[in-house]
Length: 138
Length: 341
Image 1 (cartoon, chains in turn purple, orange):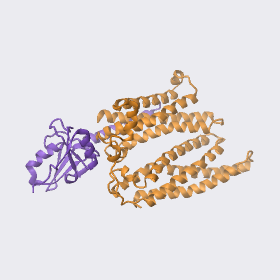
Image 2 (cartoon, chains in turn blue, purple):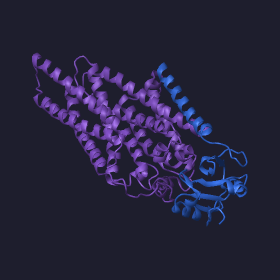
Image 3 (cartoon, chains in turn yellow, blue):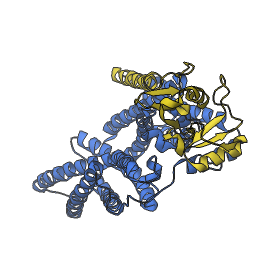
Image 4 (cartoon, helix red, strand yellow):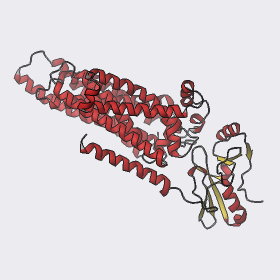
């Protein structure tokens, strides 16, 4: 094996490590409610009226924070659990099921962009559709 | 038609390939038809000059067409924002589905044969008497056909692409319980197919890499005292099995884990949504690694009974080394992601 061969492998090793580093440390922030790492798939963003954003690791944490800070909130962005897309909470379909997303707070509420995805999840994990937990009071 | 920088470049590539390909085809045909069994030295010089032009043109056109494959996916990715309901390339493929499917099949086939031709050309060029010229010219003819079909389909697709058609999301196809990518391994390994499929993916790739390394070293040849031909057949056989195993493993296990979306099995999201920044590199290395085994077969077939056994051997060894490198690099990258993520 030539030197070039091993140098090339080392380069790809470094690229992959940098890829993981990017995924793990550059992208995900910490939860503004309990300080735990925010898994990209369950991330909830609360956008405040002054355009600042708060990030949460689960719908449970976001709801707890939301209850006490409703008057400051402009809108809430949730993550589609299937594709990881960020969507406004009023457009999302929320399902409460037996599947727990976060063992620490026992969060069982899941957000989906597509109704079909919510239906599949309901069938699979014995769930039911619930109202948007971030709806402002009338 | 969706007009952006990607479609303009793709159209340019297609038009240039078509026009240069037309000239290349006529020049190749003329040269082949005028090739006699015995050629005078004066005529030989003329052929050499003309042949040089044909091969230079062929190299340019083939290189452009080979680049068109990855560019095609860049173009599809750029269409995502233009199509209502599309969230990744899958949504884009719902418009003109027959043409897109055809393009997704013809492009790797073109890439494979064009890559094979380039290696044959370099073997011929490396030999002082260029004994493969006639065979390489003949090989150019079907390649010109592929080039016309591929470029024509590109132009048709770009011109007839309708941006305002609403499409469905990839989750409705890739994430349903009865998706084909889950049903096939389920039929073979049963309901809990994840672990056996994962083990099979690693086993097949490791065996293939070991075989490629064995062929490179003298010790390896002593360990497996088989003729080069049989060795290549074994590698090709395992390579063919590796294709479906790797595709299924990526869709079912690796892509969801690497994207950190355990319920999402879309390969288009894996390569296009930026969640795994080096995903196109992982898949690209695997493809080049596997195609290299095929290129060795093409080289052996074209150079069969020719006067270039030593040069062919050197090139086969180089491609073998390229294959081992690409497959090993791809496997290392997947492993690093799985371990560290």
